[in-house]
Figure 1: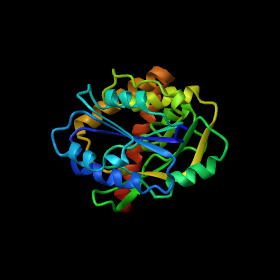
Figure 2: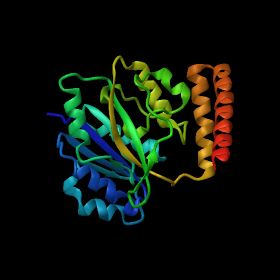
Figure 3: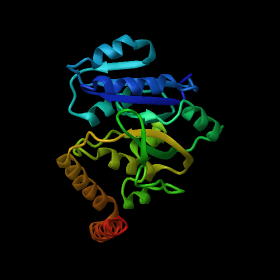
Figure 4: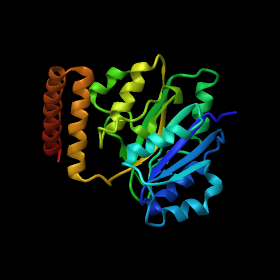
Length: 250
């Protein structure tokens, strides 16, 4: 029988970032999952870590790839679970009970997409705050007009709905991927749980700008260029007003 969940971690020179992620997966009280790791032929001690804990891993590939989304596509080809969850090295489940609570919530129903909230944590695992963009009560493909309202690590689609990531996007293919899945979804399920802890940092300013540029192009593709331009003008006004209020308060 196939597992309910497929948890996937993609690595390249992940080093010690991988250890808390593997600890988080192995500590889940729900055992109805498989754990898949796809590595880009790491040159640090990532492979030694995986080898030392191979009894915790259901499937493992280590070979050169064309980047993170190419590695994710490879993972999708070998998973067997009903639901897919990508958990990056350094990111963790919010609680050992997370998968158990989700399984209990959905019961016999099988929504197309399961989702929830994301907490931001520091390198030592301490809580910094909740993700700035909060999940909507009901998630649809149109929700992403406001940006990526659900973090990739807290977005669990059915495997049968998952198409390959579009490799023309180097930084925001996950944004496009989520929209495509949601366009095919008939039922989404809000767990109202904090599903994942997202490790703060790790993205350079230049990468951040490139990612935002790609997200703009993706939004223009799905929602129209003029509405997207107007929406970004509103984003800028809102951001500027928030900074002004912060300065006044401080």
